[in-house]
Length: 365
Image 1: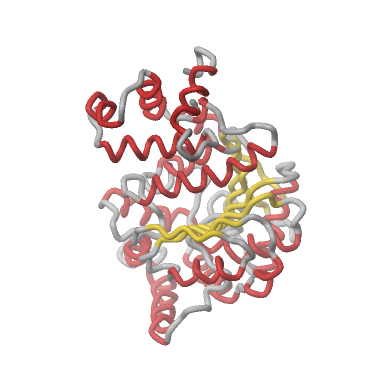
Image 2: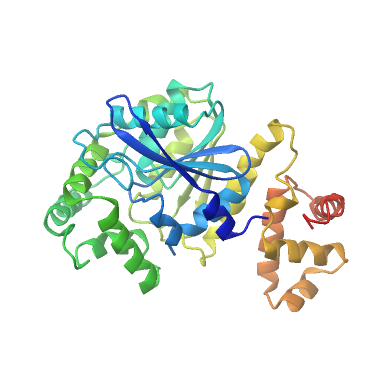
């Protein structure tokens, strides 16, 4: 099992040119089947590893997949002096990253504002996308909006133009509070700073306007790729109805509601292990298709290995909880994640996990 430090050290940042010549920065880390993230516009490939808001995403996904992620045009380490943030240019950026990274077939995860781009890409290149994960995103942000929402958007745009580049985070804190209302002050301060680091006021404003125009609703009925839609039920950035619409519009898509108010899930909230379990189990299908029935003991965290070793000794959940000073519920969550990573389910999952552990090499155990 690779440590956080090892995963961060394994990251390699590269650059490619989009169709219009814009230089796009992307990074690769982790091991396992390839997973491309079309993520939130608030990103910085190097700074994110220091983040109490984003780092757990990078760590957990990197343990089960070879993660490819990129900074959008105008943001992070990509070219900053950009004028065109249209949907078509953003699709071309995604195409450029996949080609330059040498991705033939891969899972695609759309997060936040990445939805329309990923959906159009999957529609245009169905032979390359093995699985699609839609995480707190939408097909068109203009759906499910009220007059109050439109008035609020006008206020947001005015705040971006007036306060985004200010040294104090007064205006940026409004966006932070809506994204992660249950965050600690440390987490909010970090996201305040990421707003400032990731993009200028001009870019934040112009890219937001274009995102409001992006629309992929027309391609949903034609998508046949296996799709997981996972969405926070009570978040305020992208209403839960967007998730419902995606799941209803894509053939056989599965919707997993998360009991959270946060647009970006925090590591210590109950919804986070649900997200990890669902995404890990969903991506395990790619590992199985490549001849690996599960992701292996090497994908387990140190704590998960501790739990599984005690299971192998014949201990029940209450005994394991007492030995590790955990709650029984926490032990159950660890076991659920172990089963998902190992590609196991049903009544025999516990015995199957022990059998896999006993077959592993001494180094893996």
